[in-house]
Length: 438
Image 1 (cartoon, rainbow, N blue to C red):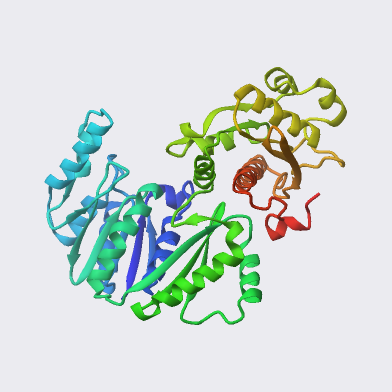
Image 2 (tube, rainbow, N blue to C red; image 1 turned 60 degrees about the vertical axis):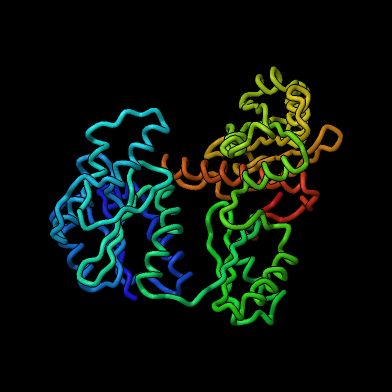
């Protein structure tokens, strides 16, 4: 099957938005042993969109259009498709019902702009959007299946898994059943994982396709087999993989690192508190972003200055004067203070130098100390994250700083996850950081 992608939006053309959706659907199509035939990106130009739809549908079996389904005047996909396939726009009753349901759930009053999202080509059927206000839609034109999807990744991704891939499979008559196991790993690089697989499993069977997909901060590993007769083989090698890499596996499917931590805490009946300096609350934000976080989290502390470390967490002034804010002694005192104030069962604390300035020879930019554990068993480790401080311009410096914060947050989250589960916490995170750890 020839599957083409048409992405639309001035923000994609200007670089204000980075296209991640085409990479996601390309990876997803691999599950059907397919790959994109043509990818085209155009701005918010009606005539260009119409001609692009006609051009690509003429040479493709499937055309996936991404973006342009919103309520504003520059969202042109429905109108462009209407003109391209000569199917008039009309109020779609199913789309209206879904939009009304979406608005009622949020106590939101619909406006004319919102109602624009229900005006679809009459030849189209809708695709449900469980997240946003704009439904997707699809139709057939000149032997081509045309599928229109939202540009927002959080809306696009579940639509791909739940609707786009089944539509493509049914349209193409793809009946061979495949079995796919998806595992999520953290703390090892893609290349390091591949090298380890080569070493541990020199006899890996060709019938079990092994694929890696980096989805920061985790790696998704896919074990795929085709045909019912190979289902047991898939199970066997999945268990072998888990036996070797189980410590790194945080879950299956779309499991997030914070979700894995919260689940571990809930299973043990434990609560957590956070004490953050260089990450500015990112650890707590991740924990509380998960449903049910109130069962495991009551309080976190962002103590950026030394004065607040003393005032809120009772970090001794002498500790700060003698060892500095970025030190083993300080993060241990921060964790102890957070436990004492919050009454939580386990704590994680962090202090580092995110850059791009502020480092010294003894304590360079990229140095971070993390402590975790219970009141009677607090442990601290230091890391060096070399992505901090890179880049000469303001934008590059900010990106490096954000990268440092995100990586430090992920490591801290995983360390306390491992602690709660009784897994080793002395691992070397990421092969590229191993040689530079302090």
